[in-house]
Length: 261
Image (cartoon, rainbow, N blue to C red; front, side, top):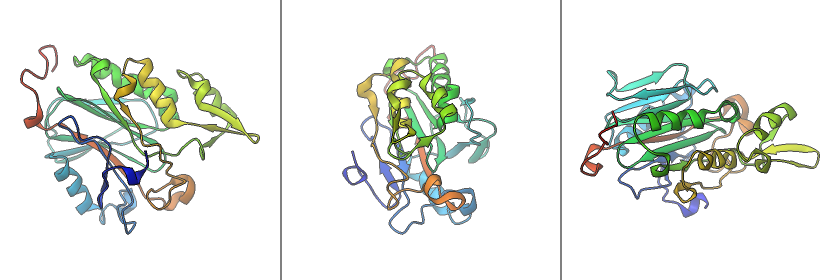
């Protein structure tokens, strides 16, 4: 799937709009100004407001993103309409109207949802994957009463196996992950990793059905027209956003489940 084959507007690249939810990823935009990097905070204010509005949310919560595996859970709306949770790389919420978001420039933005009442946003770089951030997010979702078999996932734009060259010590860590040997490859004397492939394998090993996992197959470093990339642009790189929110009016009757929050 390429960006041109997906519903694309001036801000969003939608991957799924079939379940009463709208998990979406921003792209750099037709003029390159959809930059959500900390350096562009003031310029991006209007875009952040649109993210909230387009998702039907009233509040937006982000991870601080420290390349770890800590998961934060929100079961009630935050006191502030904009909140950054410190020292975490994944957010889970059962609170309607709360958007959870991650900001990336090559790392994988992973969005998870169950239409009956939970959404999550995961910042999945190689360090987070090696530390088990996906497994920890799914364990938290299970603790809230939702089965992995009922989850859906969207793997957003990330650096691809064509471009993500890694060190031997990193390769060793990633090969230890589920089906890691299939997603860490050597060519022309260098080692490359497939972050979306590793994330897909992790999800499937934890019980998420393969048919519930959507991935575009786009490489942020390769596609300078549509994506920011730290590997390509260095310290000046902008940031994309992956975000999702529950919307109360879209809940089926009887949800969240009785054993949920």
